[in-house]
Image (cartoon, rainbow, N blue to C red; front, side, top):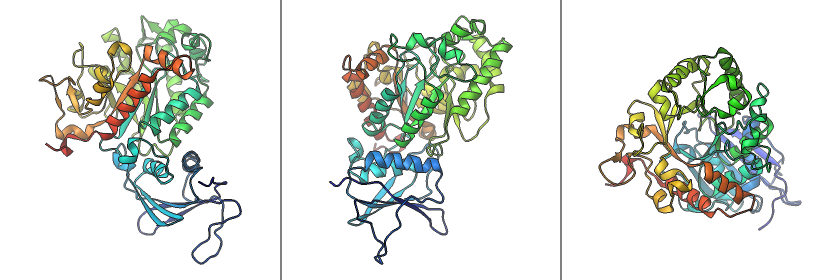
Length: 463
């Protein structure tokens, strides 16, 4: 295989009638320049009149990852304009080989274009080669509890690469605040990170928090691999990290809803985190905002009071969906545009089932503890993940306590996510630092990705 020299030209054309973007990547090797059909030399360089700088940056990043060892090609990528938020249609693409050096790619959305580059350049791997686009779940995620065990940018990058290329995932949920640490250094309240960093620094092996520049770097790397990052500000419970720098704002283990000074601090923190979220080329297809927690608050009355006041501080942006844990639904904390992450198993007390969420008209992500939590105490197995059904409400075990959601509500089940908490994170960190292999994590993550990719809506299944 010939190795590509620098890529010199991208030309964007706009077809008349409908808005169709055509992105042409022209490769240059040595002294050989691609020529047009009339044998006139093609001007090399980078041109894209209608692309934003962000779109171009992501395309270059993906191209440089996927196509550096491919034979020289002229790739024409057309966006059909058929994409819609949180739909697998965004990942549909079609590749047509026109000539030995000309390939036409039609993609419904940006995710499809990114995967088409892998497919065309021969770097698509695993099950994605056989089934190029997912069957039903638009949100296929992984949660990492980095507020318990911190991971460096390089370690996160390694996980992101595996999640995208080997497991076909497209969302990384970073649990960024908890009782241990607040892992993002904010200009408005740097003490939140500085005072808590030791609890998750792996004995001083890592700093224990990210600078804003590092967060932006992770977002950019992830976006080029078709992965959206979701930052979780877990409130009002799990407030131990806040307590280390602001004990006056925390009662027991939750933020004090009756403290005006707490709300002043919280407002600045929330605003800065929202402003930190970059608007990437993926946002039109995965319009995800912050995850605002809402789980395991020890005082139900305080939880309800907090949620009532939180509404005043939440940003109103119809384009983005904030996310909440299902417990916040029971205290009036979920708003109409929110996505609810459902984690409690049928066997647990105080559970709110997947069906309870979607019958009330809210979108949901199935994060079933009994199947998708990778911590050893939950005894995760490849077989258990293989049998998981994202559209099943109640018990995942066959029997009368679980059933598929009704077809009229299936569109509200947006996806599923596997989670790595506590001891799973400890073992993962040792694997990443090459202290001790943790093959189970990678095997289980790959199996979860395969399951999520191939899960179809109940209405499309054969009886």
